[in-house]
Image 1 (cartoon, helix red, strand yellow):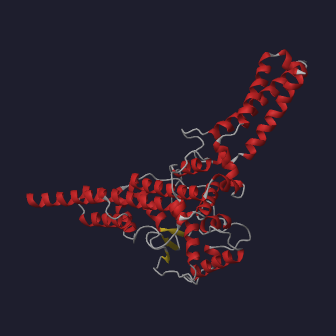
Image 2 (tube, helix red, strand yellow; image 1 turned 30 degrees about the horizontal axis):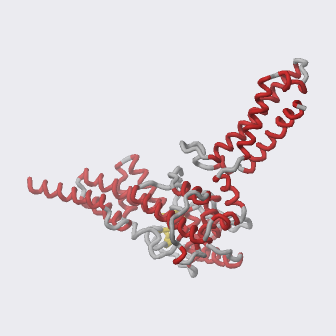
Length: 414
């Protein structure tokens, strides 16, 4: 009887764990799997992985024992360490099967929003959205660059937004319940630091300008016109989310309701028309090829002023002789990102935060360089750009005051 129990454990435990690892494979795709903050989901995944490793080790020992003319069926009874392995497998399987708050992350992301509806009331969803926006503002003040959200996290955030739309202003009272699994998942995601790498643009044809009211212009300065605001918003989203250029992802981020295929196709068509009118000599397939799948690819010849600013800042940090390129790029900043729009997705997913922090870093570093060189024109360019993005920035104003005081002192000495 014991032999059958041990044999059953060796068969069922690794099968169960293998199925669990396949179902929960999104855990291994997360950017922060190997950071210092170990979550319960990662511990459970580790238990299942350990079960598979121990089972493989026992099978290998059994095969070796078979070559030595040992009877495999009697191995568990004649080897204490194999009995211990069976007990260990069983214990790990029980631990792995146990439910933790973060296990609901997969259910929330895959079950069409039902867990969010069950676990979050409209008022709690509205409080969560308010908390996320407050965290984004704090990140700007501290200069902490947030990470980009993955598909599952974007879907979850969109579901919470939809639920929050049901709340009336009078309902949004009380405090946010931090113990709720959905709340914990999203707050952890919001606080995650950026780990993305800079991808340089390749001789761009068109530039999507994000600092100020969004607009699209060619290198020659002509501007695109769109009949539908959603067409411009979709182009902005695609230019900022090149890692997931899919129709389904764009519809999830931009629309809080189920938009019809015909409406979405009309928006895509208007986006293509607006881009083609910028340069009639170009074929539409060069910058937005037609696809018959979920993909909605945007050419790498279309870039953003945000990407150009990051490239210029990176070049300046590498060699300060590139300061004029950075100054030219800062002079193109017109206003705060997405000024005059209501892109809620940009505020929530950290896009606006990343744009503001990048501009402020570039302005402050160039201003400090101008102060060290005594270049008044370069100083004014850097400070003016930073104040357009963040009016009243104390750090920039202090650098400017110190520069003016230094200039006044040098003049008095002369």
